[in-house]
Image (cartoon, rainbow, N blue to C red; front, side, top):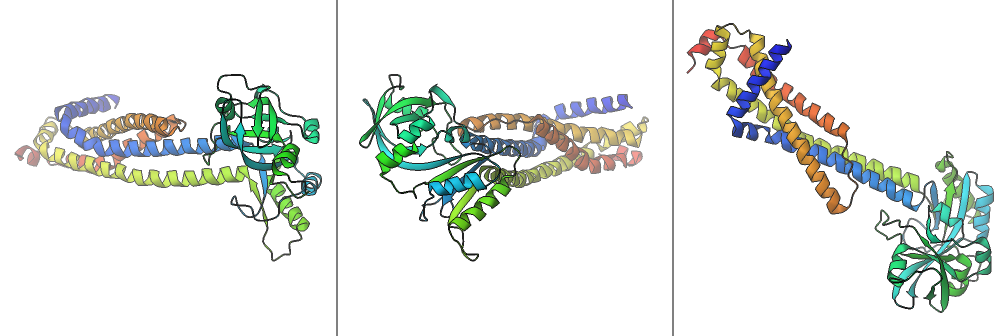
Length: 404
């Protein structure tokens, strides 16, 4: 049996080599189909990995409590320190909590100046946001209480304000306040929404409120960052947050929330699900071109059976059985589609490398996807090669020998 397969394979290779241009035009549909499917699925996987990576950059198990609805401008009342204390004391499943207030100011060093965001917070914000220190240190709770004029800066700020010197111990003037750089964070890069996570200055929240914003009221927290305990369901924490904040804001049952609780894991899952659905749809559309390629193989094989009718008659006349003739044409069709599949995978590899470099996405070429695409292309050969092979096997040897 194996020798019969091997002989059929050798004959198939000989026929492909004899009509090389026709073979190329026959498999080009399969090449394009396989390349499109593998490229789209690979890029989709890369996009999903990118989203997960970017969510992890801003903090895992992260919940964000903001005034107003959504991420737009905040028109609702800000949060207070009492709100923060109530969340910490009454909502279970919270590992760490930190207040946040932001403002945009002109940051000026001895050499450079630039507009940037200044974030005021407490030391618990650093582990919540997965911040790591590259040089120096974070500020302490005592410095928050004292309203110390210290700052931790991102790599972008360090490069632009202190391009030629060590930033530690240097002064940055924010409006009328000079803060001392005590730490530089490790590089995080861009967030999923395009913001540069390294373009910021982090100072104690009391320093921002007293010296930059002049907010001395107790209702002055722009948002609250929360890190949940590992394994604790974030949906339960969000439900408890909503319940507590509705009670503290005296909202009746028919009033909408005038605050929002965002779960980074739910955002990541939603984006990943959307990406997977889009990838599946595009992969299915690309798969249609594989079927078109299969039809091309079937047409050419039917033409080949007609052209080689006399050859088939001679083979049958000297003893070839119908199943051997059928196997020969079937193997030829599968060989054509497999060659097309391998060329398609090679083309997809080149496209994925080029596109990943072009858009800066991670390269996630998966052998499993390539294997499935190759098996599918072989199945296309079997499916669309069956009819021509059956026609060849069903020929009458005498009529075949009379064929001109």
